[in-house]
Amino acid sequence: MLRVDGMKQTSETSFEPDWLALRETADHAARDAELLAQAAALVVKDLTVLDMGSGTGSTARAFARAGVDGLAWRFCDNDRALLQVASERHPDAVCVVQDLSRPEGLPLDGVSLITASALFDLMPKSWMKALLTQAAKARIPIYAALNYDGVMNWTPSNPRDAEITEAFNTHQRSDKGLGPALGPDATSTFAQLCETHGYRIQMAQSPWQLGPEHAALHTALLSGIAGAAHEADVKEALLWGQARRAAVAQSRVIIGHTDLLAIPK
Image 1: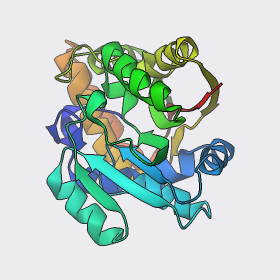
Image 2: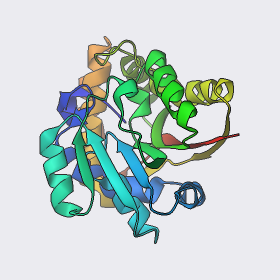
Image 3: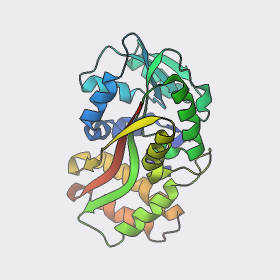
Image 4: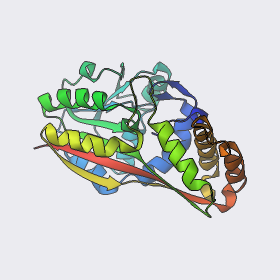
């Protein structure tokens, strides 16, 4: 997940509902459809999908949007307010207030698939190791979607784009409360760890592709990116953000993400 101050995180891995709602359409359009279908096919009948960092249930809605209905969902999040929204939108789901910083405490009984969306890039390597240790014991596949990969390309370009992207990526690797996050390195690192834990890996690109029709999301995103780059000591970052926000009606941007499916060998 693009974690920047403009999105007003309420805790280490929790975001305000308005930001989650703003990005949901772009998230659903970006997901790799084939990988999502393969993940859904791994769900064993009458068993549960556990969604880590579920927020308001966007992953479940992505499955339903792809025609995958009738799954039993267990939403796990550390934000009670987001889970309240999730329970209202998905009354059949089980909602669990969960400390996501401790994967060893995840309720994996009866689970046949673990999902997470826009989460792994917030986490350190030690967290991934702990998660894989638990999942591998139970031989549970993991579908981790929408992990930021460090790529941002605007059209038309600005001379400061590359500098801003580099600074933002540095900010993404900062400590989110659990240790230095992997940020753009999350998917490649997780894939390597999966191999050592007896999983085979499939990956697919899932970039946001934002145009003038996504002006509200693009504007909020630019505020966050500029703020993060400013914190990373790029002096002109805020001016860059102002110029980019003024041009959203004539701009397009690709924000790179990667989906990953890990299946026990």
